[in-house]
Structures are given as structure tokens and as C-alpha cells.
Length: 151
Image (cartoon, rainbow, N blue to C red; front, side, top):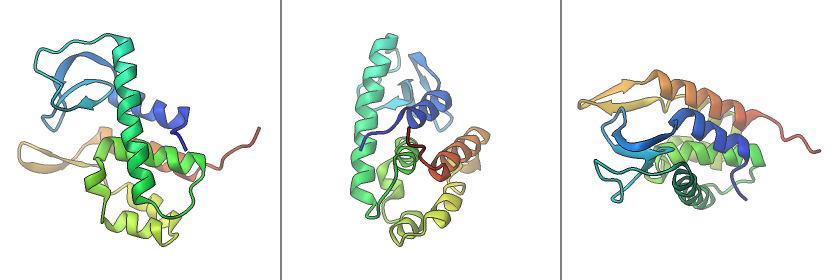
């Protein structure tokens, strides 16, 4: 399964598009639509096409992580919400968490509620609730709970 356009749009909306490297709210060097990694240097610059290529590569990693972590059936919206979630959090933060354990016990509603707990980041050494993460988690939860409409 691939992340649908609604899931990709959450990433685009929440990450924004920055063509010059910057430090995110947690101090991580970032470029494009939330791309991080050793290839991002302080003075890096990219174009919009490269940002979309990086997003596709990063999303493929998130998709693979969701496939590894989740052992219950997901519909397209649930899968895509989880891809945005993992894209932002990283696989390691979700692996072994009570949230993914609840989902893997078929606790779909419990998992959706638990998504809202993941709205904090370490800023200046202190764990803080970030309004942008709160908004993102609401968007992901809403997508996760939205039924798939067959056309």
C-alpha cells in the first residue's frame, strides 16, 4: 500500500516547503518537506522538484516502517495517517510504544486517541507541547478515522 494524497498533504501542510536548510523547532537540520539526514548541510539549497523527490524517498521509508510495525489490517486512510505519523516521529519512537501495541491488538479507536499524546518535542533540553504538533496529530487522527469512500 502507498500513502494516499491526503496523507501526503498533511506532511506538506505541516512541514511546509523550505528550499534552504533550516533548524526545526527541535533544532534538527531540515530542508524541503521535512527532510532530515546527513545529506542536509547548514547551507544546503534545493529546488521544488528535489523537495518532492526527497519527500517520495522519505515517505517510502515511512511506508516500509508502517508495514513492519503494524500487524493488523488497515484501510487506505489509516495507512496514510500512520505514514504521516511515522514520517514525523520516526520508526524508532513508535516501535514498542503502547500506541502501536494498542493498534496491534485491534484497538483502532484507542490508537487514534493515543495519536494525540504525541504532540511534544524536546526544545532546549525540555519536553514541550508544540501547537503545530497538536494540530498535525488532530489532522492525522481525523484521517485515520475517516472511512474510505469507494468511487
